[in-house]
Image 1 (cartoon, protein in one colour):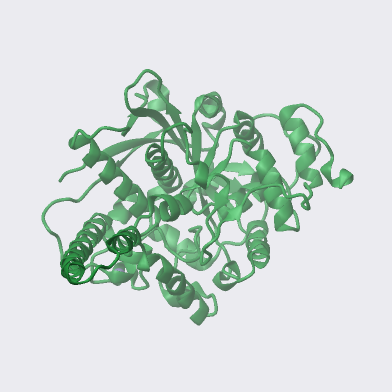
Image 2 (cartoon, rainbow, N blue to C red):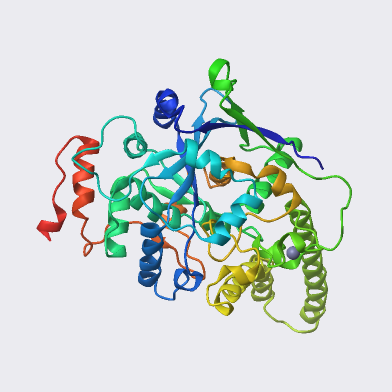
Length: 483
Ligand SMILES: [Zn+2]
């Protein structure tokens, strides 16, 4: 089965067109139904601390990284639901902002190496990166067209924010464009709940707990959703499908657009030896030196096949069992109803769900743990990616071709697609999104998510309350005084 390849226009935003593109970006925020976001970072520091058992310790470690490292690029995908269509159709606008932190920051040598190998253009970043200052606003409220005021516009738009494994992104966003990070995690999540009242959604959480895919790294989840959607369209199945439209950019604007193809490789059976590590985690310690296949399309097909095999096996087993039970029933006056219920339970267990997911944690921790958090020893660790347990930017030949400087934009696009797909697959459609996943952030190695909420015991940070008053142009209750 073929699924259609898409070409995604990504608008390349840098310092020489930032102001020119400003009105278009702000309009995209305001008219969107939801906004997906992704970042590329200059590094994360020691992996082990980022995976600390205690979530409070993890928060501290990521805060340290956010204070000492920087955001190199920011991807924003604005999805606008189009009315009057029978299916769920979105108009999608994708921006990739190249940024330059105005303060000193750490960039790890391995990060540079990895980024250069994957086509990141440091000349362009230093020459054309949109400058930004970290921490609190300097000298009163932010004014003019800056990264910090663009972030204010993002908050003002008040749309659902969608990220893939978003905790690290959110901590970096807060420190880089908003305010100094609060000391306590509870304060941070309380602030977030007020910054994004329309909800924050984590598609990695949704992939594992709602879509229940075999693997949950970004490219896998995106391609699997796209494949299932196009199958459903081709089979003319009832029920909603996701369709995308893009703008036809013209004139000057067109010169800023990069058309980013996303090929599907569904030709032939391909090499049978799929790399088991890459298949499970979207990451392989051997990287480009790996002799086995890192092709996500092949991996998805293999997973589907093995799922089908397991299903058939279960069915056979079930049939055998039923036959045996029938014989038993004929002999003795047992309780067939009870047995039937038992068989049904077995069917509901869905045992094919995710041996992989649980192993991912072990796998992710091992390389960093063994090497004392030194990614050098892993050869191809990707320090700028935002998931310490998995490198979602594999070193395959395809990714090299697709890489370059627009990865944050394209990753944001993929994240938005997963969200759109998960939303139509969700329930009766009375709620447009995925209520069961609202304000829950995926935590590596934990079965429970991090909740974005203001608890009775958590206070808001002072810097945040001041920002809120500026953003909404009204007084905010000083929670930290009323407690
Ligand atoms: Zn491999």
